[in-house]
Amino acid sequence: MMNQVHFYTKTSCKLCDDAKAMLDTYQLMYDFEIIEHNIEEDEQLLEKYFLTIPVIKINHKELDAAELNMATLDDFLSENLPR
Image (cartoon, rainbow, N blue to C red; front, side, top):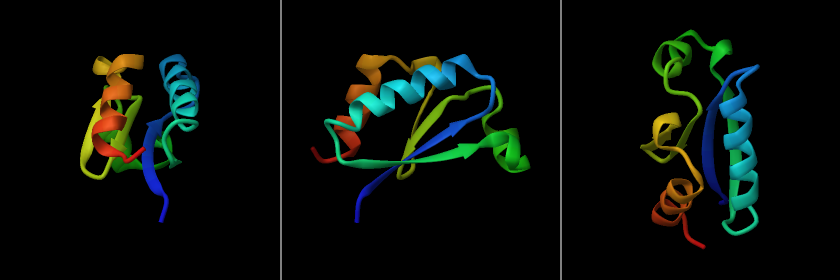
């Protein structure tokens, strides 16, 4: 089974677009499938992630917008996914 990376996003979100581009780049190095969740389509997700998107989640670990850059994303993926 392919590893899954859950990506919480919404429309018209520049940070989300940037984070998705970073994820796309790392998809070449790590074997994972990106599962996108638009928080605007789910009231519970909207409540949970409205102030922190984009959020990247693997298993039960999350990396949110406050911590997100290329270095932290690389560390997060390498700690949570096999190469």
